[in-house]
Length: 391
Image (cartoon, rainbow, N blue to C red; front, side):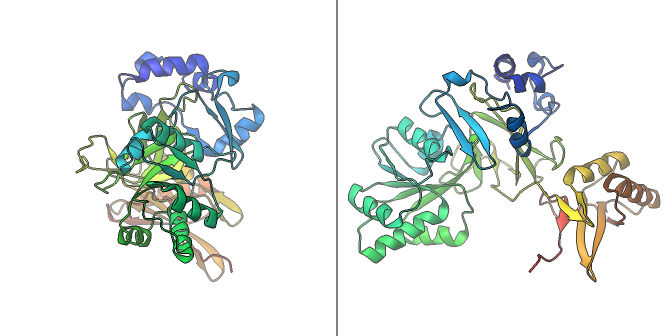
């Protein structure tokens, strides 16, 4: 927080988007989480249209385009600028927590084509003094043969691809016993995979990162949650709003990144997570996330109209709802059914106000159920679509 006002002032001077975000706010006044939470969100879901209207970056870059090191094109498309420097995505700390040390060879199986993932991990490895095999994705047999010949100590890539490479090496009778470590991201790291790698004597830890933010949080040897990177401020907000939730409650991950070239301010990732209480047993003292817990974008179509989390937030605001709200969508005899569940003691007046607000905000009729306080799941879900998927 001590660094934040100066960073915001530089961001507003260099980035047209940051200047718009800070319009009417003096950077010197943003010295607390409460003050930061008053700034508007920048939504990942809005970047495609914004960049199409104002190429190349919709004013999000904090330095001139000509001074950038790289320009990436992620699916969408969304374009991300990379500034000068070795480890601009800050992966060195995450790789160090996995166990990499200077001189360890890393076989990097993240993509180098258009997207930043390959360069993210390579930058972190180079900052640690680790030689990198820029293996990229696919080519399983070539990956296995390179691993056997070049004897890397560590792998980086998606969680499941390492298993594919190891199984191919087994089929070919190749010795890949040099591999002892793995750092994975970009997909679900399932318990069965953890057991598989553990049974092979491998230490494989994960990180949570995005193309825009770089690394946000990483796993340590304690394997209890993901520790926040020291170059970001993370908030957990109620989906559909920019309002921080109570400690431990699931919500959308919002990130402010201390990156002069790409100064993202309150960047809403669309991902769900929650803070874990206390500090990690490994001794690192920064806050921890529970990990990736799904997507916050819960928009669903009901009778031809979309309902969205921000609509539920507006209903809560209009009615001063005391607890969580959850809009449950179901099917009854081939017809869409909508029920707004609200945590509150029985109150006919509140029930009526919720019903009226539900119809006014969504333009759809639905039922209202008042449920005991604390009874709705703490999973960040605001619109819960339980209807069966089409065949």
